[in-house]
Image (cartoon, rainbow, N blue to C red; front, side):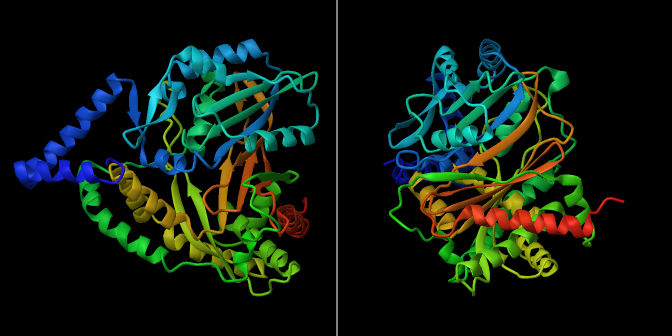
Amino acid sequence: MWEYGIVHLIIVLTAYFSFGWLYGTIALIVFVYCADLVLMKCGYTRLTYGDLCMSYELPNGNHNAGGYFIIEKLDFKTMEHEIYNRAIKNIPKLHTILVRRFGLSFWKHIDMELAKKQVIQVKQKMNTEKECLKYVETILNEHMDRDKPLWEMRLLEDYDEKHSVIFVRLHHAITDGGGYVSLMSCINDDKYKFKSNKTFPKPNIFVDFVMTIICPFHTIFFLAQYSFLKSSPDARKIGELKGPDTHKNKYYVSEEIDFDAVRKCYKRFEKTSFNDYIMGIITISMNEWFKNYGHMKAEKILSCITVNLRGMPDSMQDLILDNKSGAVKFELPIKENLEDGIKACRKSFRRFFTNWIMVSFSKFCSAIQFFPQKLIMYILQNFYSSIDLMYSNVPFPSEGWHFCNKKAVSIKTFANIQHNWKYFFIVTTFRGKIALSSVANENLKMDPQKLIDIAIRNLKEEIATHAKSD
């Protein structure tokens, strides 16, 4: 009854018929507040909208995310102690499991000592990146145990004489990329903690109130526009499989490219950001990739880009592991010329990437978590059903990054595909280097590695032509 909204309807009608619109609304707010307090006393926490979105496929799907980090030598006991005392003790969500009660999903709190078992020592011998990538691919496709917290941090102590490797795997229901990076950077002493200068302005109370009133109407407006977006027929072939869908994915990674050289390339274009430029590289690379497979009329592909809407926390106590990222859905033009591609991508992307849309999206997500879960699932599936390409830009600090006070020398990130997606394209920047990677269905007809190779070749040609040393 709860998940279909019958109880919701009874509660809302009772409040409004008993108290009127104004006092009824106040009564509903008080009811939700009190219900949350009772749940907390009983050891349960309600899922936010973002958590709900990412948990729907958990019984049948496998939306793991994370990465692996080559760091300075670290012993397992130190890592276990640091994660337990800095993270598990301070972040309630790290000692919860996902449960269903009365047709609803909740985070149920468990003993912190049980959560500590999610810190795992890797016994398997690995000393090459190829072996690490294969290991990542294995854990990427393993279903996480719902009777345990939906996260793991694994340590390979002896990668070589000077380095260890951290493998992080978490289900996307736990958090998004921003929360994941924040968590990893906070498991350090203050002097090693990553500090970001990026701020997210907060409107004053009056502006916030006005936006709260206007945003539902604006949300309906831009969601209606989304319904007209689509991929061209040839571009939809990106999701075609050469065999049965095993729901298993492969992980592809490129070599690293110098960021300063790429910066020189994109700075030559007026009003062009790094993200604009990389999308331009992707679009001309896709043009060649599709044509190599005989798809000559792939003109645009419906894409989605995740957008971080949170700043870095000042301390572990300030860290909230909720899914707070926004999502920008747009048609990625597929062009032959780089300059045309950059302009077309920028125009298409920025049509939906505005402050108003991001605020509306955030407000909408805050409200919809109180809707019946079946309705949320319908809205979610309607939003994601036609997306053919998922894209994410994951920036790490250029000056250095630490985990358990040990310096990282290499970072690779991944995010499993879900819903109908068959291809997830990821750009990672770290310590002045750029790497392209993707997670894709293992049975795709079109080889994802070839797209990455074409994109790297295009970047190298750009660098050779426009970023030569003085």
